[in-house]
Image (cartoon, rainbow, N blue to C red):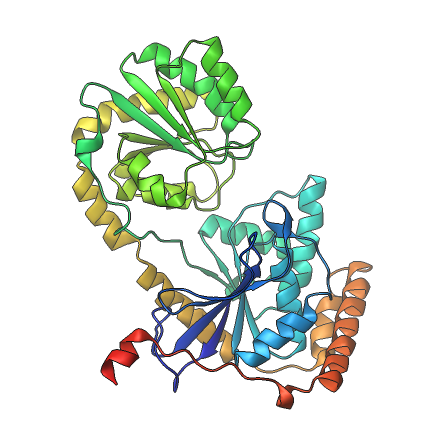
Length: 418
């Protein structure tokens, strides 16, 4: 995502619309390729790079430079904002943007370890990228601590801005609930990290202890087979409903059928699904991991250690608390606690910090990369120097002054006032 200063430009309904316009760049999604305009005036570039695994594109390092440069110049970008540590497109965009002299911001949405091979590799890549960003955003204080430890960033350069929920989309509907049973909703990717194996142990025990409990399980993934086998083994076909993948537009209709939302994640920086469930008036039972304890007030969530016995006990406590839960009161509290408007205002402050940062030449940038390690530091410097050379070749081949500048799109509100 990139933003451009919009003081003299038409208003857009995002991030303090009288000051900023937002342009999104992502990879192609199937046949969705090229430039699209969303109904709220958001412009999206779907670059012709197809994902190969978990919505990640193949790393090209320099292969995306020409198209990224073209977009940044055409749109008159001021700040480049990258998301997600595992996004190769994000890392490449931030590298190229810094080479071109743009201010950059990075948001980390996940927690990663320090011991396994994948985490060690990812942490080094993150150290490379964050060595040259102006500001960083994390979605929880636990996430901030994790990012600082992994990347070596000074803590004062990391802001904490939580996610939010569109409460207008997630409203309670008690009439959709069954009166004679307790429905526990699970909506998650059915993978190891999301605690699918934990669900296999927890669900049969809960069904044994509480005859009036039924489960709705939404989501898909490699662990779905284990849940299907568990359901067959314990003859729970009537009490465990497998919904498969649930489109986001249908999540609310599933949530309002339940009384309790169950999150079994083994690691989680924030978990926006908890916000959506609480906004629909569900009491949450969750593993006590990562940034989850920061998400909701204690009377709206029951926390447990990620072991079957503790989860079953927590669900029992939640069932006893249900008579005290007012879905509409919970919805009103969520509307006050989490607002995308508030997130946008806080993000704007981070952009202001980035834009006020002093400009640096190549040598000043290289000095930070060099400090990333005795071998890695030298390798990082070579990567940046080559990126700088490619940028100058592109400038010679297609000078910036000859670029075709994209016209601003007039927002419908402006047309009505004209």
